[in-house]
Length: 154
Length: 179
Image (cartoon, rainbow over all chains, first blue to last red; front, side, top):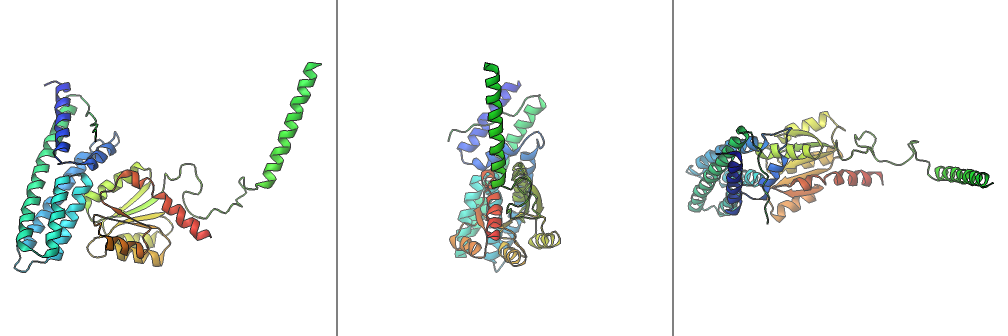
């Protein structure tokens, strides 16, 4: 596949992530921060987010698995995940966290377990999408092309 | 004849403009004499042309993703950035390096010491503006932060455009201090 084709595929793919709500405008902020002095910024931040989130999801799973659930602790973890997901623009993960927090406040164990599943699902979805997108970018760069900037019309 | 007239007109104008400059300088004795009332003594940004570039920011957040993004954004604003992932560390840095920071940005919810406690220490021990940041937008939490003396409370996700304006808090505080 030649570079132009790859670039068009990347643009279409990235646009679909925004259209489907996986990513929001905050992700564009990150892309705009990337420059020649720091050409891997987005990859680095996204990788950090993945590592951090997986720890948080493990902690959440353990916390909800206790006989006496400490909802304050659960809430603290969800709050952190909400903060980091919103900071990188992972909109659906952020929204799942918002719902999660309201059930933590109610101390509703069944609902919070369902929320955990929901958050995990959204997380793995966006992880998969971002990895695909970053792989496409790498292929373009390896072929000598440049990453096209996405212009969004909303 | 014409030439002589033009020359003398020129000289006349020169004379008048010199008088004016003399007059102007007498009324405004500030050019390099240091008698203007700038507030800061040791601030790194004293009226330099590049301000707010070089603004010395300490950013505190226990979340590594957010901390990395803040650092990048603040650097893109041309600020001088120091980052901490613990409030305790931030406090000792501030205590050991007094007068080496212009502003502190801190997350609210952190284990061990949280942003509110850090804010209280800073407002009682030193004269630095503190901005609180959180994903928590609940009114009572924001109210608490502002009541305890935060000069601003930002909700995550923070955009770089917002960080470009934080220098206003530094100027405002210094202006209030000189009154």
